[in-house]
Length: 324
Image (cartoon, rainbow, N blue to C red; front, side, top):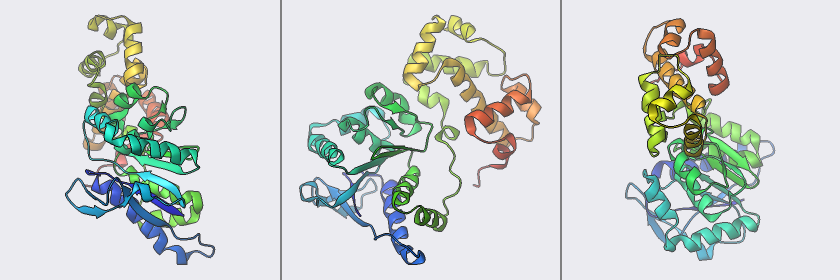
């Protein structure tokens, strides 16, 4: 199957090479399988005959106008843009209208579209994700949700599959994206490729998200986040927080749902779980002591939250200290 990888000036080197390396590794392992699929043919495509990556390397590209009909998958890796407003300006720029139109036409003609990190904004801007489930980098969730309300966004997920549309989260999720595309043809080869690349058990993006970052763009949500941190060890009701912030509980509910896609209480749990994770990884405090420090009266509540919201036990969290 032919795979086109769309790149523009400023493409993120890590994301681009992760996709290329995953497919190259899969191709190199085809002889290990008794019933191997055909090799993948990858092409870098762009608006001209070359692009300059974010780190300044030149990469030759095939002009989009010359894209062959044999393309089965179109992958959009990340652009190295850390500001959401700048990213939206880039993907919606008049110079990219032909690119967005090509993506729409490609999807309508049966091509599988895939994107990771900031690259997901291209698919969203083209309208091909409307009505579908999708993910993006956790820190881009609020901006994505505001601009593309017709998309069912879950930025907590690393990978999200819909009909001929696959989206992935932050930078290292390019590996998950590529492996999922390989698995669509050969699950056995995808598993083998993942082992050669030493891709371990990938946790949800919620494990890495920083509540104050996702909250900072909305003044009310940001103020609520600061209030929660100041009272994280206390027992309080959401109505207490809303009163202190000078709004109704309903107003606070609408603000957090619109901005970060969760209720105020769910956001409180996220702040507390983030703090608990930090304490588990950096101190020898007992589970009971940590529970009290993050506002829960007993360890059972904290254990249950880690199971429900992180999919792992307290022991697993404590054992997952950062290797560096």
